[in-house]
Every structure is written in C-alpha cells, then in structure tokens.
Image: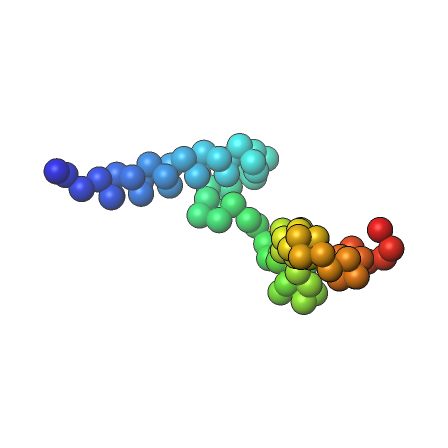
Length: 84
C-alpha cells in the first residue's frame, strides 16, 4: 500500500490557501496565512485566557453545566455574574 502523506499535506495546504483567499478576498497575499487563517493575536483577536486571565466561553458554559448538575446554585450565580 502506498503512503499518501505528502499528497494529503499538499491537498490540505491548497484547500487552506483557497479558504484564506475567500475569507480575505481583498488582500492579495492572503495565502500566506493559510496555515492558521488568523492575521493577528492581539487582545481583541486572541485568547481571553492569555490577555485577561479569564476563562473562555466554552469553559464557562462547561462550568455552569457542571455546577447545575451537582446542585451548586450559588456557584452558578457567581459564574453568571449576578442573580440570574
């Protein structure tokens, strides 16, 4: 059986370049960010845990779900930031 690792890698790179060109259609060198699609990592685009030492939205939802399952209503109100 032949190993298709190189061809798969080339295929995915071409796919990501095409996707980057559709996302950033007005930027002629959009294919340069094809590996990550993200142009910057500043505080407005980056991870809130890195910049503000906060949990991400997904982590907050998981923690609320866990606290509701175990019945810790005080902790759920604290996570949501008020008396919801």
